[in-house]
Amino acid sequence: MYVCMCHAVTEDQVKRAIDGGANTPRQIAKGCKAGTDCGSCVRRIQALLGEHGARPCPTARLAARLGLADPAAEPAVPAVAPAVVPAPLRAA
Image 1 (tube, one colour):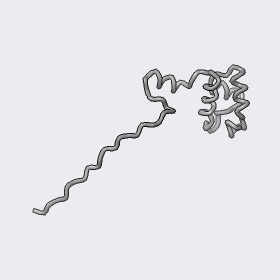
Image 2: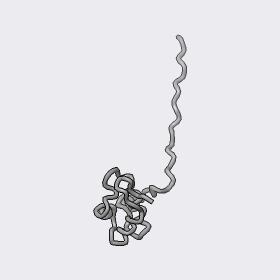
Image 3: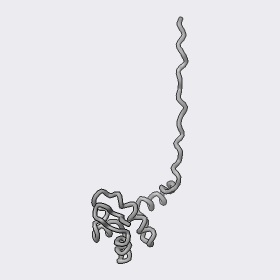
Image 4: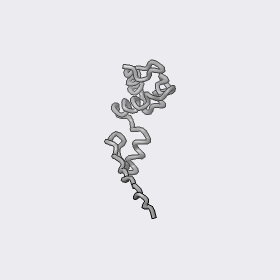
């Protein structure tokens, strides 16, 4: 299956790069250019890195350090304030 359509990089190629010592999306990009064009494949590359024991992306580490919600968890539903409807005007 293709991971990067821009450079025709397959999942197997990314896994081989990881097995070869790549620990970050940038290191993978140096070898096969995946993630260097439109960037839509970077999340999948990060997931593959995580599945193969590489360190998580810096954003996930920062969120964990700050005690923020896991970005993969269900998003919180924002509270919506009720609309304030003005009372009708009375003729004097």
